[in-house]
Length: 262
Image 1 (cartoon, rainbow, N blue to C red):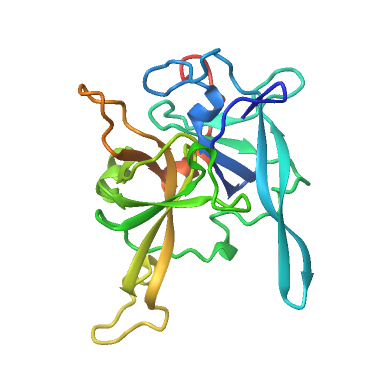
Image 2: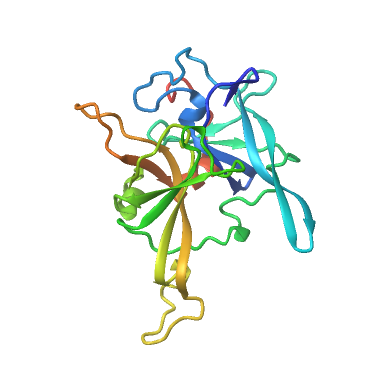
């Protein structure tokens, strides 16, 4: 996040393809500069970002079926020349702390694979508490070398079905850090895996040709924040994740932020 071209803070995000094009999805407090629960400014100076400087992997050349990948920086404005906000928040913000920013056509980000594209090759299987998950981002601005994100392991701590029913965030058990807000979260399953699209098509005693034997990953949602400190001053190692249905609501029906939502 930047303010008048100067670095302000670091965060994470991912691409989502909606009816109006590609969107960059992240935690809303990354853009408002205000904590969604306390209402306090995240910057000691009270600064609010007016732009994003996004680093993205880009294929620089291909030769003999080998691709050379480099990283490029793309600037995305959060306001137009008249000062109007270009990004959107979920209609239930601040309870649902996610936001989307339109990616300008023709930029490096415009043609990249979004997590909900068919080319992403993620599966869709039934997710339950106790399954392994991974928060993919940049804790404290650290990377895995070559500007690649870190895969921080987590465990799904609450029931996804209840989170969907209550329109509440899912809880994961992991020690996240600053810089990971807005990270995509993926869930992992191993063994004999039945994609949800096959449910109702299975015949007893027979295995469907599309049944997966091995390991599969599914997109879970967007990590946003850690819970507040408890009375002893320590943090429960829990984090909040807003699920795919809430991201779809954001991209399709997002609203402009206002003072009551910040």
